[in-house]
Length: 221
Image (tube, rainbow, N blue to C red; front, side):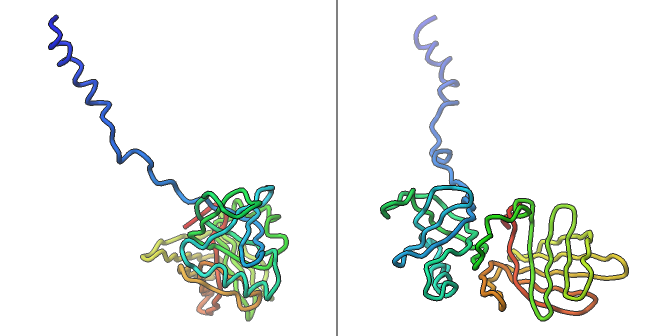
């Protein structure tokens, strides 16, 4: 067969190997880290749970993370418990294992045992407030409602996703109607000062109570 015919026969093979820049360097999803956050000479340092590494933290999204940390620490150095999402990078801070560029804060609070919660990896959502105290923990099998002076209730629920990242969870059991409204909004716990990423409103048989919320380890949004 003449050479030119071999070339024509191979053209479809070459066409299948054409370089596509759109497939190169596809954006990676953010990494979620929980750990102890310390403040040293104005620099935030994060030690992830059950790890020996330490990262210099930068507020890449401008969410006011340093200001929140300073307010919670009240002049101290830490540690705080931090639940953050972002990207790894190279660090110029000596003695660190890299940089963690924060894009989202799920939770920041004074909690020496934040890394020791065995239920956290299975938790979808936690919400709570005061006056009187209440909390809701949501998992794949249902939700757990606790209210001051009331017995703990395990309830089934339905979830509706609303525009702008809002959620509505509802439950009707034992003649009682529960609604939990969640919105993406910075929220400060009035009792502990903890900063969380979501605001919450609990309605039980028409009684309204407000508080804060955050996504657990089993959910990011």
